Every structure is written in C-alpha cells, then in structure tokens.
Length: 357
Image (cartoon, rainbow, N blue to C red):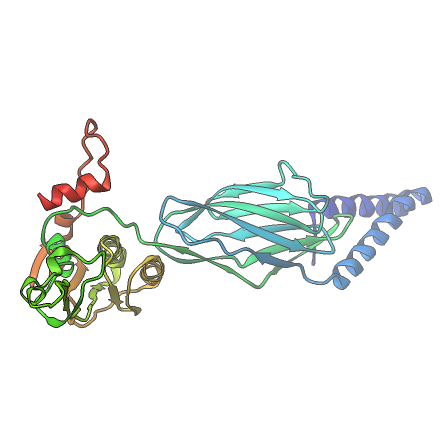
C-alpha cells in the first residue's frame, strides 16, 4: 500500500502545516493536518477491507492472421482502479472502449500501447478490446494487473489478478494451383472405379443407362430392364503429415493447412498428423476447423513417413512429398486462374452436356 501523487501532495501539505504550527504557534494550521490523517486512515481501512477485483473475459472465435476480434472484459471492483491488460507478442490491441457502471462509454479512460491497454474505472465496468490477430498460435490475454485506489485517491495498492483467455490464430493458409502432383492426387482419389461387380437387379427409374445390363435384360421374359450393381470400394482417406525444426513451424503449419484446405474443398476425406497431435480422417467443415486448430497449437518435431503427403520445413525451405515425388511448396502455391470476365454463367445442364460430349 503506497501513497498516490495526490496522497503525497496531501501529506506534504499536512506535514508543512504541522511544522509551521509547531514553529510559530499557529494552532489554526492543525485544521490542515487532521483531514490528512483521517483521510489516510479511512483510505487504509477501505483498501484493507475491499475484496480483490475480479475480471471475466469473453473467448473470441478463432481466426486467421489479419482478422480482428473483440474481447469483452467485465470488471467487478468495490473501489476505483487502473487495470492493465497485457497482450502477447502475436496479438495487437487496435482500440479499447471503457463502459462505466452506468452503461455509458467513458472517453479518454483507455490508453493503448504495444504492450497492451491500460484503463481507469470508478469501480464496476466493462472493457471492449479490439484485437488484431498477427501470428499463428494460441495466445493468452492476461493476466491483468490492477492498481486499486481508495475513494479519496490517497492510497493505492497493486495486485496481479488471476485468469486468462485463449485466442486461437490459425496458420496463414494460401490458395493452391489446380495443376501439378496435388491435383493428380485429387483426380486419382475421385476416380470412378467400376471394376468390382456385385449383382444385378431390376431397373428403377433414375438409374443411369450405362448401368443397364443389356445382355441379361434381353433374356427377361417380359422385357424388363436389369441393371448391374457395382460394389463400392472402401473409401479411404488421405493423410497429410508435417514436420519442422523449431524456427520453421509457422511455415510447416501454413503449408499443411493450405494442402488440407485444398483437399477438403475437393470433398475428400482428410487426416492430419503433426508433432503435437493428429486429426482422424474425416471430411467437411468440422474436419477443417479441427485441423486448423491443431495446426495453430503444433510445435516443432518430426513424424513418421506413413502418409500420402508429407510436408517438411527447415533452413532449405518447405518441401512437399506426394506419393514419392518431392516438390517445393512454392510450386503448389499461387492464385487460382481468374474466370473469363465475358463468359456467361453456365447452367448445370450445360455443364453436363459439355462433359457428355
């Protein structure tokens, strides 16, 4: 518990009045001394009895570098305080808004620096931090440091409050080209394999004409059509593995995330294995979110080579091995070719006719 600037000023006035009164016998100066003593006593008791402030933060949704997220901090305090919210290196506070206990914004009550935000509150209140996501990882907001003051502002004490809020920042994924070994892997995975005969059955409206078994149909007494059933092969997934040395984890995570996103966009079943864990093979948006969060958390290390796609990042750059063929990741990355501006939008029927022809 220490005096504030105001407290030091009041103490100087009180001591000066006490000295002058004793030196020159001016008893009326004691009127300046007694309020200072009483104020210090009341402030000390108030701070001693006041419970420690509490803060509760909202957890923002994960996002990619460059995105913005709003974090709300609800503060409960029986006394006025200055609150400093520390911000990790890969996050940045762009703005801070302070709302008092009356629900009104308090202009000028927040100061934003590279280290975080410092706000002044009369007691209970809330803070809205506009945070910019800068780099991959799971970053903790907090803990906050509170400097509480008595109601007269004469004394203050500083304490570190408990509690943090995680902010998940995905790797910086990029679009991949629609050509090269990765596109070949997609083509192979989506190929229609119709070599496995299963059985024949009666034709049902809607069955493709190519499935009609004309030889067997010709032998039917009433001229009924019969179609051939093909046994569906067990649909396997593609595993993407990634490994990197300590200084190149971000590059590995970005490459694995870009490849996984590309394959998921092709509606394939994808699994990912990196040094910090793995995501089982699945498809869809749930798989995408799980993979990106795993890549946000992953650290350096190596994995086994039992995967269709292996990404390695190191001092020599990032390479991708696709079924034994190794290429630089830069060869796969790039903007997708733009659609011709003067080409009219084609209907589904037109596209089907083009494929058939």
